[in-house]
Length: 411
Image (cartoon, rainbow, N blue to C red; front, top):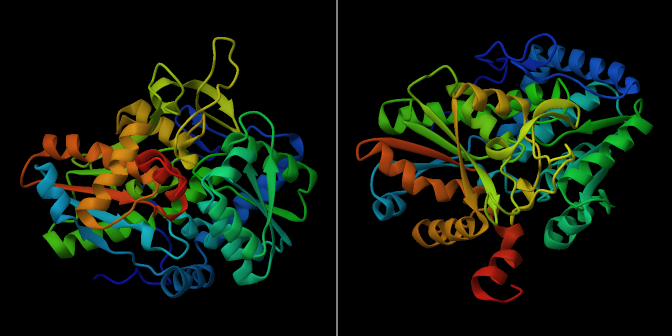
């Protein structure tokens, strides 16, 4: 298996986006209260310096290797390929990262940045709990105070991750307004940040929020796609697959695996959103049904009602239960570079069962949305083609929900 890139090398961005104002075309920017403008400027300057600093890069790459467990494998899924027919399917195994998902790549990088900035306290938001666990883990590693905001509904359906965060020393604060899910946890985290701008660093967990966060999250996760290219070359003789599939909520796992492929026009990039109970009912398919608006500090697509109010999103997966999406996703979808598809709650559950029974890999419910799309994409590509999907997280956290729906019990 290829080794990780040289620890002294700076990330190769492979794109000139965002621009100096944090814009991805018409999307992005920084729409925040005045008190946060200098805070964001400090974060941006610190990140631009760290990104080009060999000392920061060496420490970050060392932790990815020795603590996170990178590089993660690229696994050829022979039984799934045989079951579905068409293209040969590979899984990028982010479920094998320490803490069970890709989120730790970003958390480690941002905690290192917070320490560099002299911050004494970390806050984060979380939906499925994986970003919360990753942040709590990184804070425990470095001995930094950690507060995680989580919607009351998500605390109930993701109780295992809540226990993990508390065991790691984090304080978990319940968001009880609105839908009591990821949107509301993010609202509470922003309120905390406005109240404590000097001492506190906010680790945003997805490719959302005001500039520079969408750029920074992409840069910290692009290691997923960089490894995929190198591993595919070793296994197949070509570093370019025919398509790369990933689930999309806020969009961190997708932007990470896609970023090194944006300039490769022959590689199809396919994002799968949560259509919940159906596009005519409750869902979280923002790129499919949303409209441009400012949300959580950035211009992006947003689910809105007829009066322009934020609609309550729904998905069986807490990590996709978000009415917005990252601004770079909005841009890439609007230009047609990324194809957008959807999967319902029922289709995601079928995806869990399919991957589990064919390959012995139990995916997170978020990841299972991407699994649903594999059959159609593999058929479109055809035999002899290559299809990679990002296995972004493992399903331990979702077993109570999965068991209740598939087997009619409480797990």
